[in-house]
Length: 325
Image 1 (cartoon, rainbow, N blue to C red):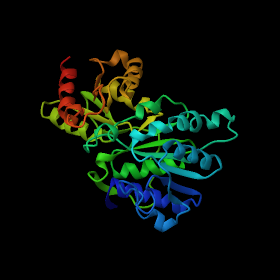
Image 2: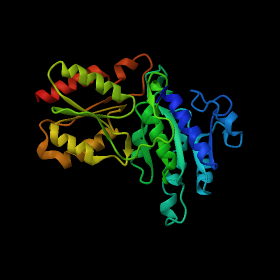
Image 3: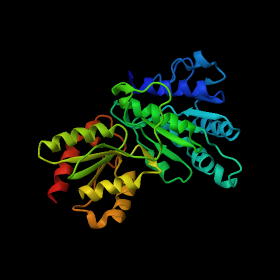
Image 4: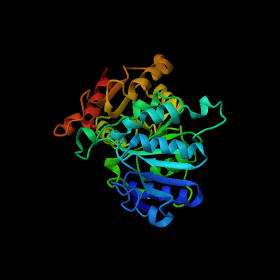
């Protein structure tokens, strides 16, 4: 297997799917010759031509509407929203058109093959317009799938699965890992099933649950807890909608405790939905209240980014509190 970073893995996934599917197009702001602001689409226009990889005007609502039109006519449309912070102007098209297209037509028409790729999250000193984690906004929308990879191997496998899925998918890419995360990535046709969480590490005392860039935070916190004799089970949710209730519930029934970590603000974050569901599924097994270690309920701060982030130390402290409850 080749060693590559997350950007290279995403680029390889896009390239291989464009080779396999002649109807697939990649488009967005600066994705053509420039290769996108992070260079995720580098070389695609040169390889596949301007008709299949091209720049759009600076209008996210227009990008999403155009994507709906292509996908509804049977094409495979992969649209890049340059930063997840800028997906909000496109919410009307995504929530009221993409998500409802199949339902309102009685399954006569759909926008399967539609993927919105977008980098999300902080850690790059991007300030409040380039650091948000808006995944929870879309998990409440029936008809959408929401996917977040944690490393290059996962990024390739989950992106290929998203492109092939017969439902519209929002694919959030943790941008602080674009070049920081390097690992082995299978060559060729590598697909990871959507809707399935992965138990990254077995443990007995507490379940730690997260996704995307926060998985490294959980692993570091688990290492700190291990020095105190606490055994942590770590789960990567990977797909937030639909999310894998069974895998998480099975783990919590074993450990008796659950800690959920995400970078988005606490209030209204997806951790709340998980906590409510697991409380229903595992109430008689719980040894302590379900813990949430999340971002703050403030606009994303530039100079106080470190204070905002739900880091390994905050997570470790929450683990200790849960185990000692």
